Image (cartoon, rainbow, N blue to C red; front, top):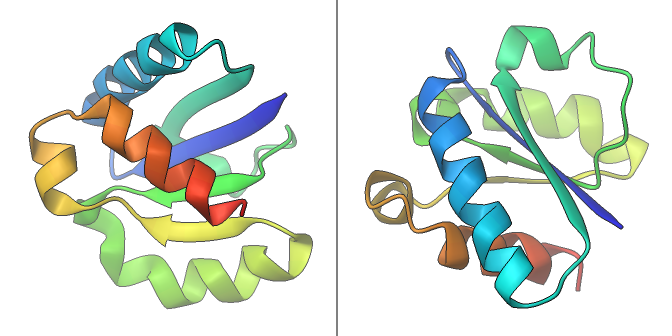
Length: 101
């Protein structure tokens, strides 16, 4: 099971993107758990995360988030603004999987 978490300012638009990513994963028969939440809530989250994706609106937090969470083994990246705007769940999922190697 691959665990992917999306974070943004409020969690609304990332929730829509999460649904599209889940559909893409389903069609590829991938076992993934994808969740979305506000950045402030993630800092208290105790669940598993292998890939942490930041919404473009919180990209300014990238270095801070990397410093805090990469040492814990998480892959951290910012979601491409175009893919985010188009709600391209398939492409965002592909990018997340590439981070895992």
